[in-house]
Length: 417
Image 1: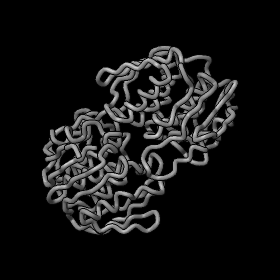
Image 2: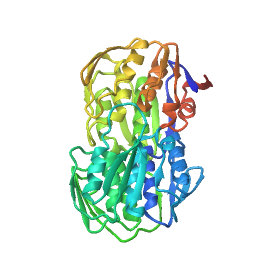
Image 3: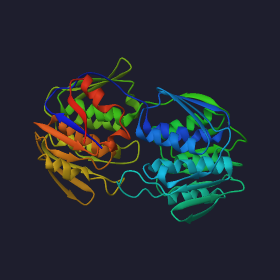
Image 4: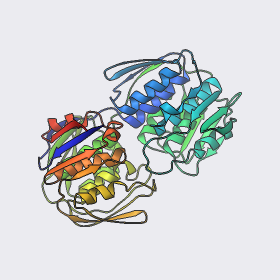
């Protein structure tokens, strides 16, 4: 396993190209199962999770060809309707294969998913929705076995606006008989991306970006070409990096309309952020101000940026309260930040951060994807050297992070453990 060695204190100045969104690319690869025709995807990020989904699809007998940031996927035939544990265990998004398989093959056998240990992500919302569409669901030996002679449109009222649940049900309903209405649907840009992609394939989905989705089932979908949206979480991470290092970064390709809550919060913390030359310029000239934040489903402040903001607040002068309402176990980075000298107290679903204006480099361990990013940011701004182990988490969601950071002035290197 590799480690990251960071010598802190350098200002980050320059340009960073934001890659394709992991959380949009994964469901788009799965949605390619909905047609026998070839699908061409552009702006595909080079990430461990993308490699995993490619292996999963190839294991099913699906043609997957990758060349740089482009991928060709063609599910002309399926060798198996099973997604085995050894491929699914590292990535929770593997559950997204369930909806397309049910729609296309009328049967699916998918291992209960793994991934980052940041708390329960209730797949029962997916399964209840599939049952409402007419599927029979059995849980046996760690697998979900779903069957449906046909899927029939219905109204599904989600108790929570689950992102993967909305995407899974939307993909299944795209080929169902009749009309499906999903109430309390997730509104994230990645959900909109999946809907737009299916519509480009000949689907009929309306209400994207709202709480009510209407999916009119069609008899068949066709191939298409599609460019994946930029990764808003990667962009937010580099925004915070600019602020923490007193830097000045232009994030090429980043879309401000996807980051309204993050931009508002970082401006409140003292940053200057504006659109420029097809990207977002972010810098800070004064002190970092303490701010409070509460994670919420989109368009609220994203849970995937909570750890990064917490690292930033360690460098503010004052008290911040960061509340996590989306996942119940997403403060695992706190103990590692405290190893670097942070003053953080966790009380229930909130973390109280007493900003000390500085941190000291130390050996730390990554526990999940976004926690990994927060430790990298803390190391960039800390005094001395930080050594981060278990950075394989980072590789799941950040493309060539150390290379991008080095290009804008960071003293960072990857070494073999």
